[in-house]
Every structure is written in C-alpha cells, then in structure tokens.
Image (cartoon, rainbow, N blue to C red):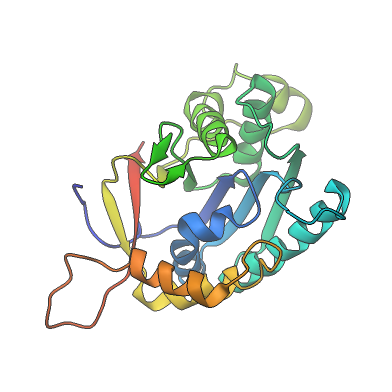
Length: 243
C-alpha cells in the first residue's frame, strides 16, 4: 500500500457516506466518520437498504426487522456524531447498480453537496474466508458512477435541476473503503473506541460485542507504527482527488 499521509483531508465541511446496509458505515469507516464529525464536519449517511434480511430469527418478518435495524443505525450514527441518516429502502440482498439507483444517489449528492463521498469498493469480490456481499459491490458501483460523472454533469438526470432545482455538484474527494488497493491511511487512534461504541447499537447483528471489539482493535493496528510508541489505530482507503 502506498500512503499519502495519515490524516483526513483538511478543511472538510460536508461528508456523505453511501453504503448498502445499517452497520456498514460503522464497520467500514466508523472511526474516520467520528474524526470528521469531531473536527466539525457535517456527516450524512445514505443507506440503500434497511438490512431487512439480516436475521436468523424464524419468527421475525422483514417489516419488523427493517424497523429494528433503522433504529439501531440512527443510534449508531448518533454515537459517531452523524446528524442524519437517509434510508432508500431497496430490498436487502437484491441491490443492483441500476440507473435508477444512480439517479437517487446523484440526487443526494446534489442535495447535500459534500466535499467527500465515502463508499465501498465495487471490485472487491472476496478475500480469505470472506465473500463480499453483492449489495456492497452494487452500492460501490452506483456511487462511483453518481460521483463521476452523473452529479457533475448538468445534462445527466436533467430533471434533478429542472424539477427540483438541484444544481450539479463536483465532489472533491472520493474515499473508497474496504479497497483492494488502499492508498491512504487515516489515524483514528482517538476514535477507535467511538467506532466500537457505535457498533454496540447493532444488537440485532452482533452477538458478542466484546469479541467484535477485540477484532476491530486488532485489525486497525498500524503495523508501521514505531515499536517504542503507543499503539496507533488506522483506517485504510483508496482516495481519488478530483480537484
């Protein structure tokens, strides 16, 4: 991995996290979101689904699970300092990178006008003992296309400007989380416990939060931190700078 520094970009005022499910923002980049929020940025999450399939309970319905998971996500986001969560409510497990989804995401980008968009890597299919959820790949593909070129170009989804008055918007930075080839690390040492606290809210999904917390602390350890220094925790991204 090449790195262009261990700090989040300076001067960030607005951040838009675009993910597939409740708990994705927290797992993929929760500590970085917490850092941005603490530094004064306005952070918004857009979730394509409400995670309405993610339960082994034979008695629960998708409608019941949707309500539970949306409430868990609102609490988790609040723990990070995130002010707003938008649910698009596509069916969980069936997300596709359609033109309609691209339009929805372009609308949110034009509406919120973020400096930074954070999303998933659509090229990450599997790792050892892990197959990436197809919804993660779909939201990443749609979000990348929404960032460039759909949100930038006035004549793409022209109805957004014509009917809603939403002007084209050019994003400054695209942060791709869970990237196959990360290019940047963000020092989140002061926020790793905030990330873990946010995940504590996802009670329907995490059976053993202390075991999960231990894994997260281990995964986030910076292998390049000096041996004689306190442990440093990082999150990794592939970053594209447009401006």
